[in-house]
Image 1: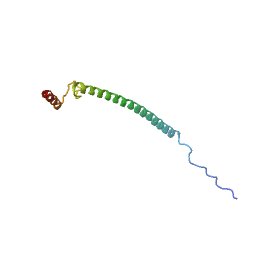
Image 2 (image 1 turned 120 degrees about the vertical axis):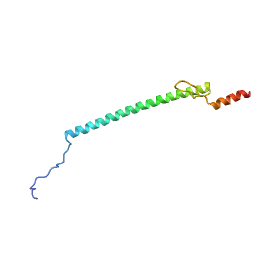
Image 3 (image 1 turned 90 degrees about the horizontal axis):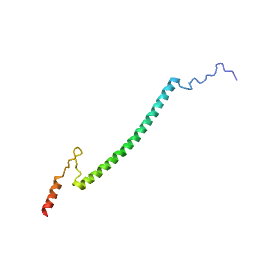
Amino acid sequence: MAKRKTPKVENLRPEKIDKKELEAIQTIGTNIRKLQADLGALETEKHSMLHMVANLQSTLHEYKDNFNKKYGTDNISMADGTIKYNEDEHNKADKKNNDR
């Protein structure tokens, strides 16, 4: 067998990216992980706030039930507390009282 006259060509492809490129993608990866963690924290806070809203809505519903029992309506102005009676219901109640 004849000896090779030209030297064997070694793989010329680089094995690693350069340092600046590595630092850039590492920084991007770190920022992505930080933002994902922040989003998780916000979702947890949102979940907690949704529970608080549901509890307040439940409490308001209890007040409205009590207003219906006490005043015959739950149509109350939250600005000044004015009771807004339905005139049709008021007229029916007056008619019942007059028929007695």
